[in-house]
Image 1 (tube, rainbow, N blue to C red):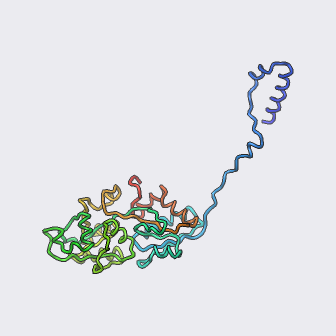
Image 2 (cartoon, rainbow, N blue to C red):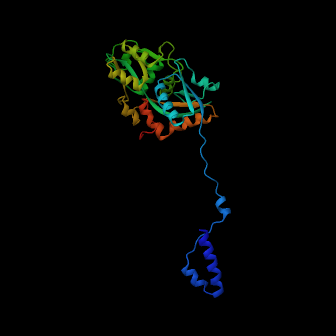
Image 3 (cartoon, rainbow, N blue to C red):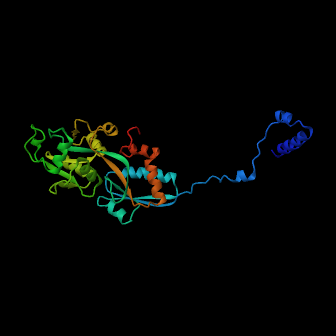
Length: 298
């Protein structure tokens, strides 16, 4: 390049002397010249700084398996980050985040005082005993049953026995209860007289052994229990069958969000985890974790 510029310079001077500059301009190629100032004006590309540290996630609902899958994949992409998961039926994710005792909490509803981000969806199945003649309800009937307005099975279905409905509720701090009550608009909550089941398996077992019982659980364990021959019905809601496809395409009406809650100021590693969960790769893992992606096309 330097030799070419030198040649052009010499020829240009000669052209001016002999008066044939125009002819030289037609014959000689024009070679662009870049000054050192222009080449130095562009900053060198920046290299992303690898993140490192620990992320503590706390929860209490049926999402544990999903979080373990997300954490394992995230750690494989960020070897310097360790994701620890504390999961217990009595854990209180909201309070834990408010006290800055964890980086991320998992809930079933938005928390106004905290940063709340939906990362997945879950279908909520309403279960009755297999021998119960009631096979379907409307969302309004479900709301009336769990709010205590409807107290007898004969009020739901005229051919059902005139027996009192036995409500099997979930513990107060469970994610699925929060989302269930909010979806149905149960303002005053489920009656305190209702029995309480701490886990999905406990709720399913309670209904399978009681003809008058009704409860609600996450869709995946409910479908699995039915496939395993457990004596339960998954009620049609608004005439829509509770199954994977109807949740995916949003036809099934009883759904709740899986919310990731944090304080306003996230650590770099917690922010990266949230971004991963919302990414195309993260959303593909929702089905593997027995939940449903935010978008129906994924």
